[in-house]
Length: 147
Image 1: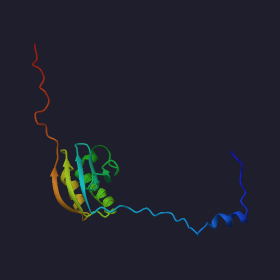
Image 2: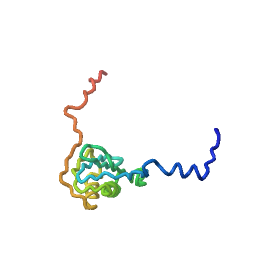
Image 3: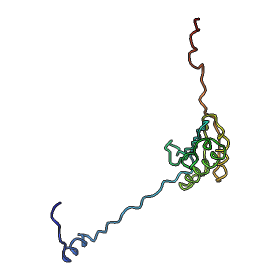
Image 4: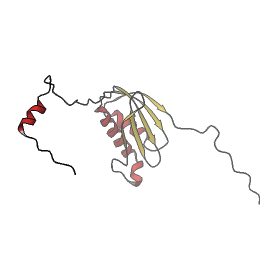
């Protein structure tokens, strides 16, 4: 455990009185401010995910239907997607976000609803891009069946 040290009042005055009267002050951490950003919406048949990034691509706010308490089939509803968009946008507004570019991936019932949720918070949407991955030839077909 080690020895316990007993500090007397004379030692306290020596410790507090530094050489040049220096006073140590803890630095206050400042939150970063982002005025422009990008919103990535991933809408599947089972869930809707919204993440908001700074111009460099670092995520600083995100939300999903599961984090808001929706379970099972209710996660994939347009109502849940609207709340997800609102929740992520409110988190991003704390960082001073004002303008966003929206990128949507996937096919699901929450595509347009998530955009409506973001727009309802007062954030300006400058562009909407559909980035749904599309196959350019697909997978190799099955070999013919021999009977």
